Length: 155
Image (cartoon, rainbow, N blue to C red; front, side, top):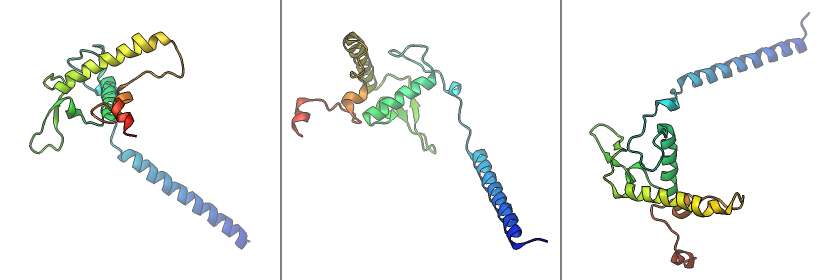
């Protein structure tokens, strides 16, 4: 004899299993619909590296450049030559070109930052309270550095 309590239990178990199957199926479909991620080795090898080591991978250069763009609040075309082609919503970038003065300045700044970190901060030793500097130290999300006595006096 089937009681209403056992029938309710069976219905509840059936319902929970049905919901679990639907959720799992939806999750599986969502995973299959996501575009494939390019593996790191698919990033083209960089050209015209002058400050970074010549064996720096394309993926590593991309990470470094992303940090630069965030630190300065700019996009790639701030330092790199870009051209817009008809029908293409994204500009074509000539990353190897040295035609922009901003790229030349960026290289000098990279050398300066490395010198400060190694020649000066490096001599202090491994003090956890002293951070190495980077672009964001002075730029703070702006294309022009904002470290000046005048900027401190405006507060």
